[in-house]
Length: 270
Ligand code: AMP
Ligand code: ZN
Ligand code: FE
Ligand code: FE
Image 1 (cartoon, rainbow, N blue to C red):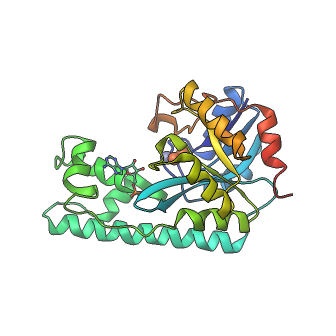
Image 2: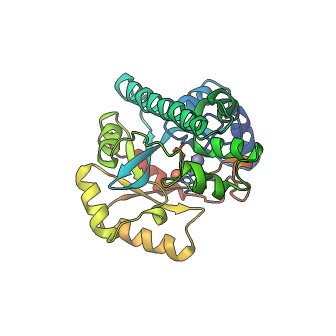
Image 3: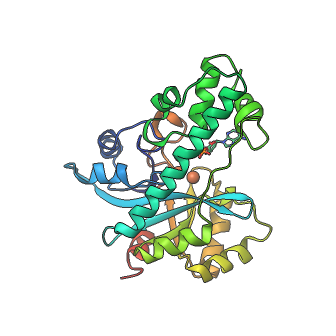
């Protein structure tokens, strides 16, 4: 079995890289890609461990497309993306930390008793608004996750702070320049008027693949994106988007990508 979309606790998954490898092997997987949000460090840690399965170096970038957010997968089949790409990722992480620090200040100004350090204890290396939400709930400032976003953290919340994020086009170009294969993650979450026009425009930017198979895609959607990919001559990727206990309904191997799709992806950019 092949699963090209998984997360470790280096982003928002619950398992360490080592636990993920063990869990995947136990689940009978032959190949997994680690695709943490905006970091390669979970993959790097896993790559140094002994293991019984094929491990693919991946990433899931959070990018902006107009006013919406688009997740962009990148697969580096043929070697490390290199320093330029890694330095760029560090910049993205720095922007996140700066945003978090401003967000904590805003909350304090609103009278909320909370420190950035407390939130970072929960979020560790990839602290984000979901961790702020958890602390706000713990301390009784919000009754639910939704309320925490509505009142404080969401775009219309009282403490909202904008975070710098790269444009989708830049993400595509950076992945290509680093030798990777870019693939639009879970396209069901796109907010575009015309899917075909969107994919044609992104293909012009260097997009090479689309995540046809994903836990959030019904059989109908899989068929729809598969025909779109074929029509536009885009390669096909797929994976469960496993997050461990952070998303308990999504299991490793929920999605089993057929080997010929992986071979096609591997054959790009060689
Ligand atoms: P961050 O990257 O730290 O800005 O956090 C983004 C994450 O917050 C997303 O992946 C969502 O899981 C969550 N999120 C963003 N907006 C909302 C919202 N309005 N309601 C609930 N969760 C949200
Ligand atoms: Zn995630
Ligand atoms: Fe995603
Ligand atoms: Fe994901």
